[in-house]
Length: 152
Length: 344
Image (cartoon, rainbow over all chains, first blue to last red; front, side, top):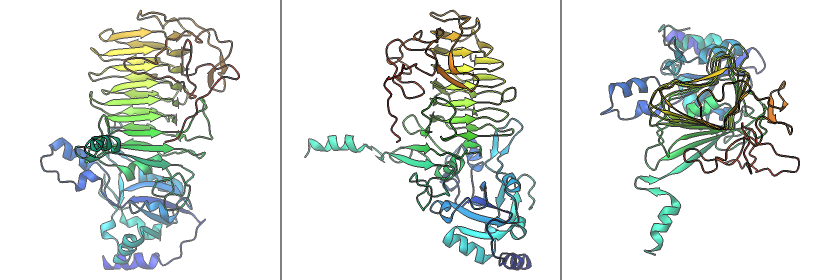
C-alpha cells in the first residue's frame, strides 16, 4: 500500500504538459443530498433509489485536453483531474452510466476514483484546490469498476 | 405597518416554511467551466460546460424549506454531446426543474444550444415528476430523444418549442412518455424510425397541441393507456405513418391535419386528411409554412384560452393571431410582428 502511494507521488512528479495525449475529468466532490440526509423513516425503495445516486469519486464526465480551467470545480462541487497519457476517446469510457438491459439506471456511474485511498498529499491538494494533474499510469489503479469490483 | 405586512409577505414570496426562490444557472458547452451562476464562458462564475455537469452539481430537494424552482438556461454554438439523466432530485408542482434552450429560429440551428447524442443512449432520460423543457434542440442517437423512466401519474411533464430529430431509419422514438400528465406543444419532431410521440401507462391525461411531425416511419402518435384522455389539437402530420390511440381511452382529437388519410381515423371534428403541405424547405428540414400552403395555414383552432394548455405563440415566438395555423409554425407574412423572447 505504501509502495503504491510512493509510486503515485513519484509518477505525478512528471510535469503535466498540455497538448499531449491527455484528457480531463470532472469528479464528484460531494455526495448526492439523499445519501447524507437522515434517512430515518425512509422506505426500502427510497433507500434503494438514494444508493443509486452520485457519490464522492464518481466520474461525472470526461472532457478533451485543455477544455476545463480550474474554476470548473464549481465552488467545490467537483474535482478537476487532468490526466496525461489517456486519450479523450478512451476517457469517455469512464463516465458511463450503469444501466440494466432495458436502459434503466442502476447507478449514476460505473466508474469512480477511490478518493478515500489516494495518498495524503493528493487528498490535501484536492481538499484545498479541487484540482489535480496526474498521469494515467499513476491514477488508473485508483479507478474502480463498481460492477466488477476491480481496479483498472 | 400592520396593514402593509401581509402585502410585503405576498410580494417577497415567503411561505410558511421560508423563502421560495428560482435557482438560475447557465450552461454553455463553449465554457471552460465554472459554478454556473452567470453566462460567462470563463471565470469562477462561468456557465457549466455541459447540461450533464449542471445536473450533477445542482441536484437537490426543491421542495424543502421555502421551495424552489431550478432554472437552467442553455446556450452556445458548441454541441453538447453527453447524455443527460435527471434523477436524484425531489420536485413538486410548484418546485420543478425548468430547462430552457435558446432556439428561436424554428429550425435546426448550429448557432444555438443543441444536445447531439450518438450511440445507444437516450439523449435525455428523466425520473423526476415535474420538469419543463423549452426551446431545446435534441439530436437523438439510436434510441430516443426523451425518455420517461416512470414518473408518477401526479407528475407534470412539459415539452415545448423544441426541435427533436432522429437518425432516419435508426432512432426509435422522439419521446417516450409515461405516467405523468404530459403537455407537449409547438415542437418539430422528425426522422424517427419509430413514433414521434409515444405514451404508455398511468392514469393522467395528455395534451398534445400544434406539433409538426414529419418523416417518422412507424407512427406519429401512440397512446396506449386505457381510461385516460388524449387531447390532440392543431397537429400537423406529414409522411409519418399511422397513429394509434387505444379505443379504451377518451380520444379528443380535433383540428389536426395529415398528409395521409389518418387524421380523422378517430372521428373528431375539423380534421383534414390527404393534405399537401407546403414548407419553406422540407429537404433541408425547414418546416416553416410557406406562404402558399393550403394544408395547414388558417385551419387550426385558437388555444389561447384552452382549459388545459393555453398558449399564444408558435415555435419562433411569434404571437398567433387570427385563425391559427396547424403545426408548430404560425405563418407570418413579410413585415409581420415578432415577440422577443427574454432570457430568464
